Image 1 (cartoon, helix red, strand yellow):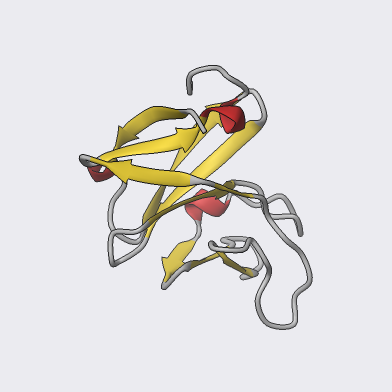
Image 2 (cartoon, helix red, strand yellow):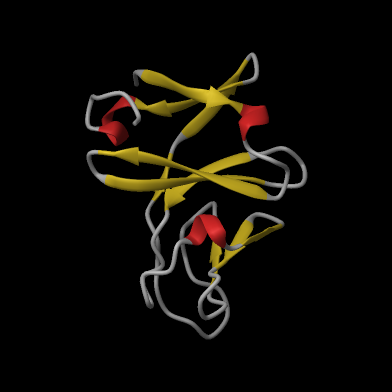
Length: 110
C-alpha cells in the first residue's frame, strides 16, 4: 500500500475532526480523546449531515443533524439506526497522518 501525507496529527483537536477533499468526495478525519485518528466518509447516509461537525466520543461520531451514531472502526450505525459510512485506512508516522493513496484517487488532498 502506498501512503500519502495529509497533515500533522495536531491539526485535528482531541475529540475533533477535519475534512479532506478528494476526487472521491469529502473524507472526515476524526481524532479521539486518546489521540487515535480515523478516516471515514464525511456524509451521514440518513440526511447527508456533515459528520465532521458532529461529536466525537470514544471511537464513534454522532451526526449533528439527527444524532445517528457511527462506529469509526467499522462505519456501522449503532443502536436502532440502520446505515453505514465508508471507512478508510490511516496510519500515524512521526506525528504525520498518512492515508492510503487509492482512497485519494492517486491525487494529493485538496
